[in-house]
Structures are given as structure tokens and as C-alpha cells.
Image (cartoon, rainbow, N blue to C red; front, side, top):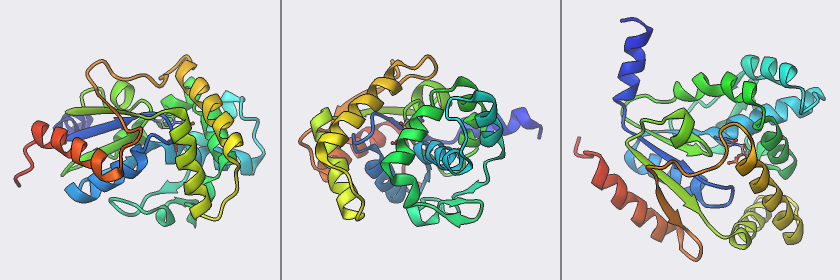
Length: 237
Ligand code: DC
């Protein structure tokens, strides 16, 4: 079978996309859904973060598109498990799961993600995650650009205050620093950059279902999302 056949087969793989701003809870629920269904997980933000980390380590100019495209093409990353824990994210064979979660790397990721040629260079890498029995893809442009034919598209959102609080608690749990006011400012800045960039801005796909998670527990969000999933896919195999 030729390359076209492989792409056709991929299109048949049931896919749920979960897009939204950072702190909306999409990472948590995408992982829980992938575990529950035993589907693959694509944490596309981790790929941009890995590129951000590689760029910072190399001392690259984060606005130099040509250098960053080369870096993106050569990026030696691995996600050994179907639903990986952060510990299993590898850059050049080194476990960097914790390192990529820092605010510095997040900001670098947001900058390199604004470069169109960088996004293009990372496109196929992301599409390759679509394998049987199914895929849960978490990011900003999963439903709009990377998997426009996904069977179910979710747009997850929450107020900026709630998202800053969640990030603050997350960082505290991991023993990482950050004050609430700094986080509020950084999240608002990153939202602005992610929503207003020329390529693949953070916008809901027209055929997506929007879920506002402000004030909702993870369990409540999961219950709502699993209902949408059960309504869209045949899960009886
Ligand atoms: O979801 P996250 O915070 O791990 O993402 C890190 C950065 O990567 C974020 O600022 C936006 C960018 N990103 C993107 O542009 N497109 C994606 N599909 C995922 C993340």
C-alpha cells in the first residue's frame, strides 16, 4: 500500500481533539480519556515545549525561523508509552518531562510555536500519532489544522483567574516556583500571543463543542466529555 493508503487508514482511526488555552484542564482530561479508552495520546504542547527547551539549550534566537525549522526537523524526541507520563518524554534519550513544564520553557514554546514554518515542520510528526485503536490529541490547533476530520472536537476553556490558580497549584505540587500575579500576567500574555498569531491561532473549530470548566471538578468535566464521546463513537469492541 502506498503513502496515500496509509493516510486513508489513519483517517479511519477514531480521533478526539481537545483544544484550549493553558490551564483549561485539557492536559489532565486528555490523559484521563486516553487511559480510559486505551487510546493513544498526543500532547502536542509537549512537542513545542521540547523544541523550546532544545532552542534554549542551544542558545538559539527564538525568532530565527530558519534555525528553528532545522532544529524542529532534527528534534530527536520519543514518547515511549501509548499514554506517556511526563517521566517518559525523552529529548536525545534524556528524560526531560519535568524540565519542559517550567514557565521559561513554556514561554519559549509559545514563541517558537508562533513561527509558521516551525508549525509546518512539526505537522507530520503530530499526525503520525493517529494509530489504532484511537487518538486523543491535546493542543491549540488539533481540531482546526492537524486533525480537521476528527470525529469529535472539544474546545475546553476556563476564566484566566481560575487557570492561573490551577497553574500555581500545579507548580507548587511539583516544587517549582512562581507567584500568582506573575502567572496571571504570563498566562494573559501567552493567551494573547496564541490567539493572535497569524498561523493556527487558538480559536475553536466551527464544528467543536465548547466546555467551560470554570468551577467544575475534573470528575464533572470527565463525565461531560465521556458523554460526548459515547454519543459519537462506537466504543463496544
Ligand atoms: O499546552 P502547553 O502549555 O503545553 O503548550 C505550550 C505552548 O505551545 C503554548 O504556549 C502554545 C503552543 N502550542 C501550540 O501553539 N499549538 C499546539 N497544538 C500546542 C501548543
